[in-house]
Image (cartoon, rainbow, N blue to C red):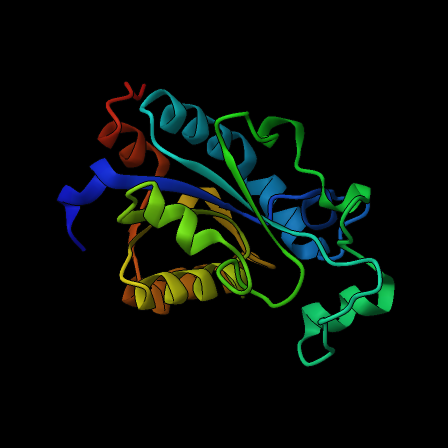
Length: 205
């Protein structure tokens, strides 16, 4: 990775929504538990404030299926669960972000109705290119599916990828540790929120 490309970075927040993160109602209870235990929402919120202050883009990548689930298929576990239970539908409480991560007026929201990753069928790539983004800092969930898929698609499109390890979570501590140690380093520079903040010129103490 090129450590000198931080000046053109954007913060991308993956699937931080009630239907994924709310321990009481999550479609993915393991992810909700891990996100809570790891405290990722608070760290991501701090990064978002720092990116805004630096004039850099903050992009919320949300799931928002159609009410009729048109275009969704049961060919993956997340897709099958969403269809079976009618979850993550646009306009329902499932798709709302936690209070700390409500998009600001200057932020971008990229919502997808189908597929498993943030670039699929969305305006995300065009949004990033039009903002002059060369490096994406990936945060959110999950390190099982969305984050590795996100990273791979970003690399294929020519972006440099950074993943602050303390701002992502998976279905379990074991799967998260495995992905962070074995798969994701091949696609991204693994870092942490303190280093990202320092690169933005934010005092860390």
